[in-house]
Structures are given as C-alpha cells and as structure tokens.
Image 1 (tube, rainbow, N blue to C red):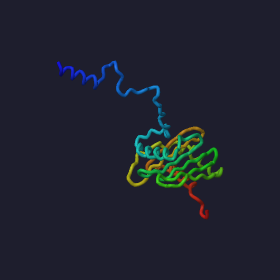
Image 2: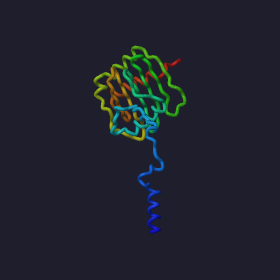
Image 3: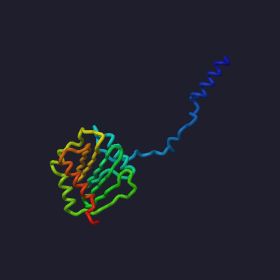
Image 4: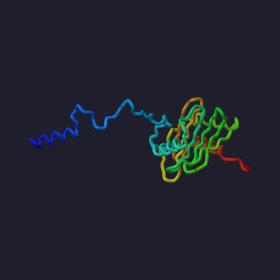
Length: 187
C-alpha cells in the first residue's frame, strides 16, 4: 500500500493532478507576438538555385534591403557563399545604387543616371527577348557565379536566377547594368 501511495504521489508531482495549473503556466495574453520577417523575394520560387537565393536573402537582411518596389531593377552577383556585388536602379528617379560585397566594409554608393542610360535599361528589360528568357537555367558548377536579376518596370515583376548566364539577352542586360557601375577614367 505504501508503494502504491508513493507511485501516486510521484505521478501527481510528475504529471499534475488535473486541478492544479502546470508548474510553468504561460500567460498567453502577456505573450509578445513577433511578426515573421518580411519576405524579400516573395515571388521567387527556384527549382535549382535555392542555395544561392538563401545566400542573397541573408545578404539583403544584413544590408537592410527590402522587397523590390515598382520601377526598379536589382542585380546580384553571387559566387559560392557570398554576394560579390549588388546593384539597384530606380528607373523613375534615375538613381543607381551600388552595394558593397558581403565582406566589404564600405557604404553603398549612389549615382544619378542620365535619361539615355535609364531608357536603355528600360528598353532591355521590357523587350520581348528578355521576357522570353526562362526564370532559371539548370546549370551548376564550382567555378563561376549565380546571377539574380529582378525587374519591376511599370509594376510588372520578373526575375531571372541563372548560374553563369548563357542566354545572350540576359548577358546583355547584366553587362549594361555592370557597365553603369564603372567609373569613367580620370575620375
């Protein structure tokens, strides 16, 4: 009988008697509700390039970058494990922002674009050739880099996430954007 009381006492202590509140009751009304972090790339659902998108998203959070808004273009160059360079173009205000790489300890640099430069980028990203480029390629390797290009001209969102882009139309857009980041000689 003494053994049964001991087992019952142990069970009550371990599992509670049902009438008593659990030992560490949580006050649900006082609990702080945390909002989930904003999705930076809510429309990108890669099949092959998930790893690269995660690296780019971590970079964006580190730099306090947000979801792409209307009339903007954004380019990320991402070799294995880091973002080498990120560029954002505000087409409406003709502003170019060049963000430093993952391990660079410098600030972003902003530059004003000419009307011709802005028009050229807008023409490239709204062309039928660009629209026909698949969102992803299925290439992968140890030597090279992934490139993410997001565009939202006139509030029409598009993305291209390619490993070592081979499509000529995509390479043309990337080259033109990267050319804008180069300083002319003598400056």
